[in-house]
Length: 350
Image (cartoon, rainbow, N blue to C red; front, side, top):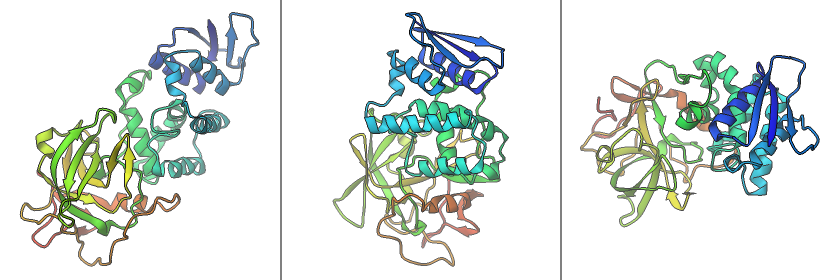
């Protein structure tokens, strides 16, 4: 048996309470003290030396639990990445507030869903608590400068098993902006150097991939290359019924590199519209008479798309254009320019 004592007013206590409840860590006792001079300490009932380094405490508690080990990557490289982010948070007293550190985390998440691999790890839980104070205090304009980090934070705060375990936590409206904004519902780990490559495609059939929770895979036929079937992963399963997606014309960012996600190939990004709190999501649809394969245009903008968008870090064009993708009066806009086709404008249904 293990016994962990933490200061009740510390960030370490918040992390501990979240982990104990989330993972049901019955093999270890969690105690709280109000003595500010008392360091966090893990004691062993078998007489081993007490551990006071909090990152090591967390690792020992998790690796000695069947449920806790789920947050520890098996691969040594990912385990090292996880440890580095936990240490990073520890050096900031688990309260990351400086802009340079936040920008570093945002840049890292450019091509990542989580901080240490394809699934939730201890690094994500620790950084979620460590970034909570900044996220609560920051203004929407400040948060908009870190789209990758806010996407990650929003994902975690909507994980029902995690959020309900965080005492006195309520979901933060991260996207409090005027109008209804275009939102990339599912990120396929790509950069977006050229918006001009968005193409119109028609969804032909879909299948649900149970190994990739929360996503639905649509098989798409590209009219420009007859017989070529493309699949796109979009996280719409929680927002739209199959009949709301099947055989619909949509706007797609089409020059993303292929990405293998749990055995399925994803080749693009579906554009959608959400309300401010993301409780309602709709497809961004072109006019019904628009032919499949037609490019999206904006008045006054011209040029040819990149053949394929780069995956190199540090060239986050998407963060520069995302804030300017809007939907006003049911019409899609990039800044003040309408999304338009030869026949009419792109729109949402309601």
